[in-house]
Image (cartoon, rainbow, N blue to C red):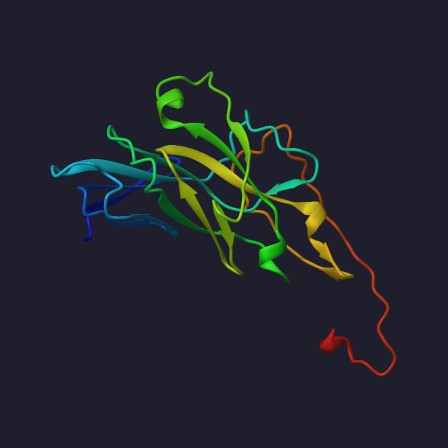
Length: 201
């Protein structure tokens, strides 16, 4: 079942809302897709769910030195919680060029919907993701959510170098840069192997 969806742009992101019941459904805004499995909502009466794409990294996200934000953020909310054993899947594109997506460590800086709603003093929690809660593909991150919340995903950079190979990436450009996030440019010099053309490297 596809929930009824309304899509429009808001000031600091993209926003959509839909009405869903126990049959579940799917909602897409910009490049973010939220999939609600059957039984995740314990109701026969449709309830409204909202999903917003966040384009600015908040200043209260304190990234560690080896972390880089690789996605736009998200915020999803509803008055009805998910069932405990029926997580919702959120699929978000990332900006990295990956050699081995399965070897990338991902962390989520997240706010609980119940804690954050209406309270700007709530700080995000740093959650290290596991293969059971997060799957990285060459172009997307699929994350399981057990409650309505919001947050930003980051890659741990010390795992970008695997067996002498280098993973290149460019973080998403944001209108506001948090204090903890340093703007860096990295240049790597390599020796061209004998008999190999530069175009093949």
